[in-house]
Image (cartoon, rainbow, N blue to C red):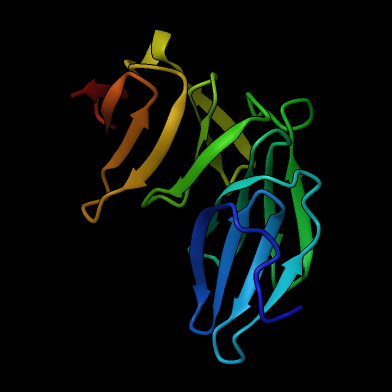
Amino acid sequence: DTSSLGNNFIHCITRVDSTHLWIGTENGVYILDLEKEQFSHFGPPKEKTVYDILRDKDGMIWFASRLNGLYCYDPVKRSLQHFKAGNSGLSSDEISRIAQDDDGNIWIGTFGSGIDIYNPSTGSFSNLRSATSGLSNDYINIVYKGRDGVMWVGTWNGGLCKWQPAQRRFRVY
């Protein structure tokens, strides 16, 4: 039934363009065509639970999965890239949230392994953990880029953290 969403457990909603919302659920990703008011299921991610969706500045669509890593969909080529801890430099397959900084890097919040930062230009990952970066906790609930470009991180029971690039450390509030 294209008139209804296929799953009622919603984790995120992202406007990908002027006529489509992408919705992360406990049963994968659904796309709502706002003009037709119809849903379609986006099938590729193996992991059913999608916690976050990001459309980056180059038009790529990123999915944060609960247990199966990170996905990057290229809507022009209609290709899907899958990043896992065992094959990419990603530190964990348990991804909570994603955001893009002003330099185009993808910040990836994990459940227990801090923040991974993916540089699309080099295809490489770096990692920020509580032991080395001042991050208050390695369990990440939210990653957010402010209008001023500042990266903010909310953790489980560790409060709010502000990234200070000059010091390469977080300030904890």
